[in-house]
Image (cartoon, rainbow, N blue to C red; front, side, top):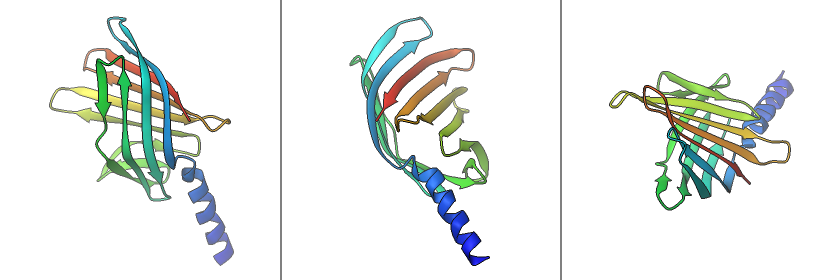
Length: 143
């Protein structure tokens, strides 16, 4: 029984450990109007354990006009789900992290999907929904 528990703990850590590290790359930002900007830099510094998903640092630079720097945050992991306090925000697996955050102040929702490829790259897909339509989409490939 002890060996089984140790094996399950090890496998669980390996599942989420694939998203631990510093990743950077480039991509494209597209506004609802159709205006497109090249993103010369998209970067993330992530840490995952069996119990925790943490964004240590991150952001992007798209065309010099669209820049963002992410504040550090963390979410609990319970049974493959991402939680902030008692609110379920998304899911996490060995190949994908997916979550959304609603801002009641302005009615907007932020969506982020990170997908790990077989080559070890991360496909970055961010969307902002302003309450009526998708206002911004940013896609990129990070290594």
